[in-house]
Length: 404
Image 1 (tube, helix red, strand yellow):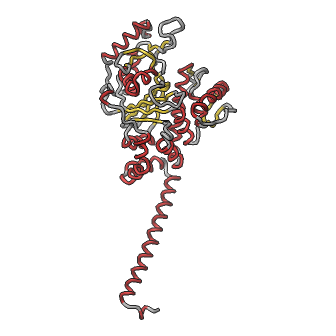
Image 2 (cartoon, rainbow, N blue to C red; image 1 turned 90 degrees about the horizontal axis):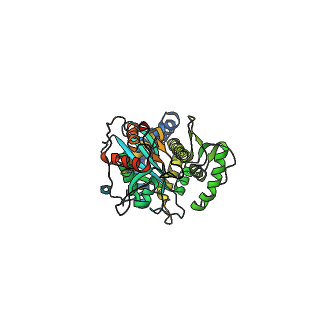
Image 3 (cartoon, rainbow, N blue to C red; image 1 turned 135 degrees about the horizontal axis):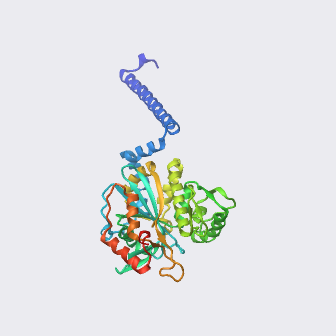
């Protein structure tokens, strides 16, 4: 049918239809162009992943998408709303730094309550302005002050605070002995650590023959505890470890550990150094991971947590804070890792507090800790830290190095 025989109204409809088709084609071309530009940015632009994550997590649309994917599962599966901040004693350190406690528990029967001990105790220190991160291991056997659930005061190994009075007791133990302001925590068990590492595709770790032997020994028990499987490690040198193998590596304390700088750590000091090295590798792997790996980690931590009543991670960090911390994680720079206390004494059999790590002057150690973590703040030990320091000296007979 020719245009001459079409009515005016029909001709107008046909023109509009052609216009809509051209517009659709134009939009598709724009979308393809944006995808091409996005791909070019990802592959060619330095720090493109950081740029994309920062943009995505800070814009309203990106946050809405993340909320829709994970917020409800996070609140129901991961978030611990039982902690009352009013029950936590904190020092006033201003708002220049964020301090978060990381606890690793050593369960034998899948328990995720305070019927177990926090055999890994770490403090993550974040400079809110520069995003510099420092990681501190608190030796689990350190003699420190803590309160029981009935309010009684006792001096015990640091890892007993959670067993004595739950998360509140563990946080108060850190804050009261070290004059800190920690109100947020994250706790993971063996299964959780292994699954996080697997979600990232495993880690490359340089191991010695002695470490290989103990990895395989710990794997026997760790398989039973977690119900997960992993083969024995057959090689030494730089070996790609699965999550369960890396978890077994973190448990080693019977052979020396030598870090990249050549420092040698013995016994439990070596174990905490291994744990810090693995956490650093996890952070570096996460920062360079692709979208698939990051989604695997998010699904593991949030959607798969508490499956069949078996938890792998718990935290009282609110969802909006988690989203904020994502940008910090992408942009952060782990500048230092170290163990605390700096100066210690391990009593021999027959001496008071045999089996403990006794600070050689808690007050002096805490002063050094604050100088390390908060170099811009003027710190004076609190009266409580002074009292704890005197009690430990009088009861253990272990004095600061400068008093000998």
